[in-house]
Length: 234
Image: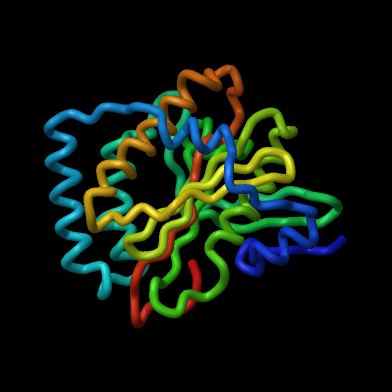
């Protein structure tokens, strides 16, 4: 059986191997991007502080520094931790898609399970450099989403996100069609939109899909920090 690691994947490779098609308008992406999710004054102050830190450091932080100083705190503020699901990092997932064994270590997943993730469902992430990034972040994100879709029997759209430095792009996959959002710049006013979109994702997990799927990974992202000296991929 052919084996394919997420790190090897590009959009072009996935389009050709799996008959995927990028489309401009996806109802599931549009609904996600428009979904309201209010933040408290305290949360807005924290987000503003994190934006300032990012603005000052984005061109110098390596992957770990971007994750620890900005991405992690943003996710902690959304709080994807619950008795029924949790935020996991660098856990291996894999599956067979069209007779190809695909696997990798997404940098973050929101998954059912308190101590370890089980079946992938929503979004996946990877961290790379902003300058001269190795590989295709969108392709690696989509590869993980394909595995999630297969494991979950194509029952729901799969959600994803990849981040390059301060730029965030959200993704959805349904069947063989996927969409990629416009870029959101975390060093500007878009940071509040990014926070709202992540809170909306949590609402989708809890409300729209319910939690009857007790053994599913619910969300992850692909993310690329800006670093000049970080070596290799996570």
